Image 1 (cartoon, rainbow, N blue to C red):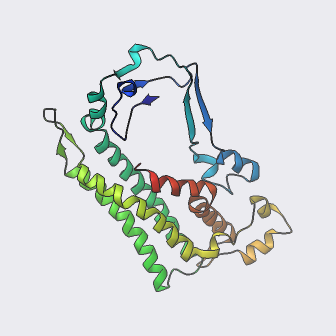
Image 2: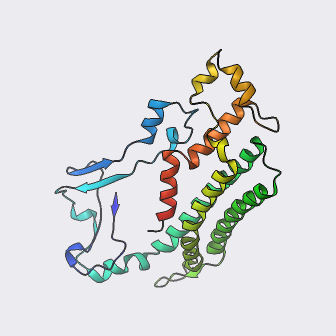
Image 3: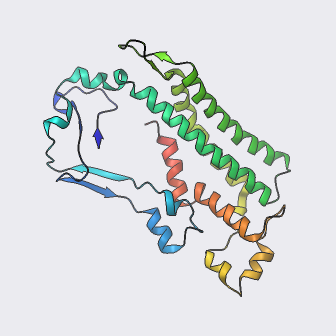
Length: 260
């Protein structure tokens, strides 16, 4: 694991430290939050929680309790000036913002597609307000793809190097402004326009295997525009797991605070 300082400038040289340490080093502890993957397995199935069951990144508190860090793993120690110059001089911020905006843009490809399919399945896709909402989500998606393109296609010279470039940070910082606005807005639009469709669903995939319940599901939970009940259920469980479940709530918190 790589550890470095990012934030308020360091003044005390005892905190001027950049190093790596193996995660199995003696004294390193990880105190994890509850696992959404575990909860999904205990209360449902991958059908019911398609994202929680597969893609949970478990956040943890990292504790160093008298950990020995060999000198060969230490990059900087005790040099306050070098520590405070590490992030601007290393090119970390332009690269991290390019990574962040690319990640978000691709994520919005997925969410915009789900939203568009969901309003088709629930029968509201032809309403003007719904079309406006879908268009706004696509516009947010296009904005972040455009920022990523601008960062790459209008690079800036990497100061202190000869002939090397970095992604354009001017556009990267614009991403940091707009991303915390975009994600809550997108979630609001989905909840407003898919509405009760997000919870008008059976509790478990086991209901689909019940001879007593399945006929009712096929009749009363089928979607509009030719969506069979099972396809509507799969689609809306996927969208709910993306924006409404505990997993989805964690992702909203993540996007609100990703830039630090």
